[in-house]
Length: 397
Image (cartoon, rainbow, N blue to C red):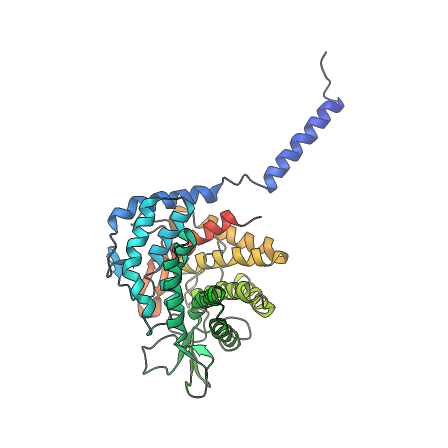
């Protein structure tokens, strides 16, 4: 006996398969492009290990003009990113070679926990040893982080209410604070969580609040540098150092802000910081100069758009920050995940990838006005790319 196509059985089967196809369309199988890309990065990082022996003077950073590798010393603000990448990838797939290499770099980096001449201790110590602690729960790493937090706190001026960023360029500024400094606050928040000492939290909160008040213009674009009078706290200048002009919106600075205030809301649960992160996201993704693929030009107001370099580092920072913002506020999660997915998917285009060891991505810009690191791979672009992909994989949809 044969069933006719008009039979209720066929209608039922058709409805069943339609529902299955519809589910897969809306909810793709999790083993997808994210894992594929993380596996590509993981395999490349393992292959590249023999090319980069731990050394105090040779932390990978970027490329020279001639295409050769440019390394940097442990005191550089970027020194924590390469070991941080290794720890993230070790955490992704337990690999003794990655762990051994990360530990080796850490031996040369640990002394930076005492460096009182920089605000970049979060980048150097928390991006490296913080990931190491997450992967291993090594109590020694926690002690290193706490010492770095103590050192960073020494740069706080209570009359200004902020942490001083730079000690150089004393002929230009008296007490400069840069937007990047938001990223170093996470280490202070963590110090309070671990020790119960609220002084770290109070310093971080004050810095976050005053940066929100003083760095941002009415349209929610931000200045790169705000200079204060160290004796009175009065604002003296609002300028740029790496942007196109004092009045422009330097792309990586806008990205630091979105990521920073998202993290600050996570640590404080203060809704004003969440609302501000939303405003920053709205500014960035409604900007008329944002390219269709969401990989920003190095400055939103660069003078020769569209004939300007893209900044992949700004894109990876944005993607990672957006994924956390979506996790913290479900009301706008769909929109933010859509932005992050588009960035990450577009970065898998071959034009953005590189085979140069030890990098994964190219086309970042460090400081075009200063004629450094223009249209090259840069280690922090890779760091936040790995972080974003891991967040994409782990956060529930």
